[in-house]
Image (cartoon, rainbow, N blue to C red; front, side, top):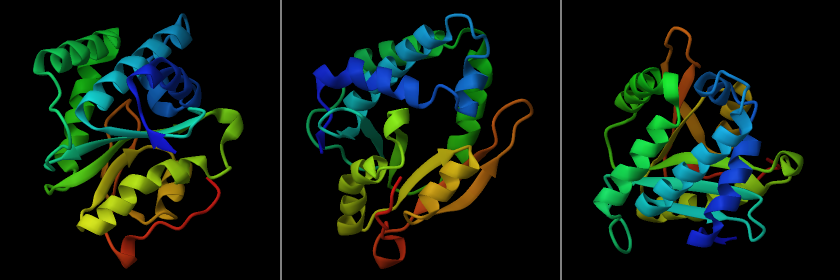
Length: 206
């Protein structure tokens, strides 16, 4: 494993688009099948760029799996992201959603309003190439930040929608702390992992 680099962004964005092609959130954000694959790849590439600037990413050497994190209320290592670049990226991310923009903004605000109000590492995205899932790559790319959470006594948080993902994260020390149900939108579960022995991730296939 290694940290995400600038040159990795296009390949990681394409990988995440494939990993989440049939995810309920993806199908909600991009309801029309026409051009969905192209639009989804562009949207994920923009998200990877923004998350790399504002947070931290870990990938496998072959870029087949990636975990992208944001430090919420935690001083960021290294240079601060350029404000205007971040604003520009976020604008492009929003515009890529087209008719789903306002609904996505509302749900995103509601989900993050329910997150615990404490310094935390927020897992913004975790994905693995579809034909390589179940081999422990996702678990592996989570470990650098989870180990840091344990060492620095910090929680980790995330939000997810499928029962399979909830079970995956529960096996790695996360527990549901809140839920968001919105008409027509996916059912989001907000999850939190405490540091230390009670929240130590168990390495299993996944």
